[in-house]
Amino acid sequence: MNNPLTTREAAELLRGADNILILTHHRPDGDTIGCGAGLCAALRQIGKTAYMLPNPDITPTNEVYAAPYWAAEDFAPDFVVSVDIAARKLLYPAADAYFDRIDLAIDHPPTFEGFGRAQ
Figure: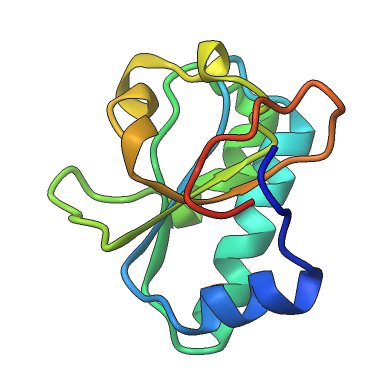
């Protein structure tokens, strides 16, 4: 892993971004959906345009939390964030298309592969 950002540095990076797309992992659980929805809500509260990439594997239990934040098909992000994704193999096909565009990867496991422009 490269030099990880501090919390303050990650916050500054997000404050400087707009048109943000948030990626979650395949078969999304409450951890990735909670991270994505919480981040999206916080970004919107500070005036950012932010969405989550719709995830077709979501369960009805988690759908209620993510649905207000799904991006429209024509949303063109300028900044891409991954949440709770340790490895590329955890991306579903629509999210995998953004792998080389991840500007900030937010993850916690020791298995994190260290991708993204910033971590």
